[in-house]
Length: 108
Image (cartoon, rainbow, N blue to C red; front, side):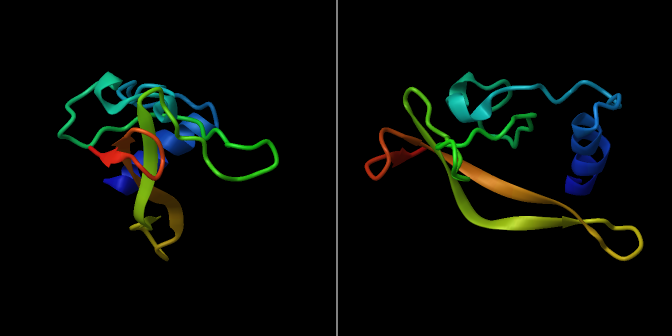
């Protein structure tokens, strides 16, 4: 589940704790084209990736690759704990890859 991914993997990764298994690779997703990422293109895939900002003093993400760019789509999904008071434990963002330059890119 999304909750398990956040609590069992991401939280432990952030705090440099041992992971239950090393099945989620560290990859700079934002600089990678989708066909260069491991796994099936038709399946959901998970990676540890840091956020790179576009401008030094800004908060916009730099998601450009050599052949296109990643664009966030839809609303961010809240991930809540299923235990107790349903506490917010994370957010899920869906990214779609576009070939070409922004404004003229073709969704893949």
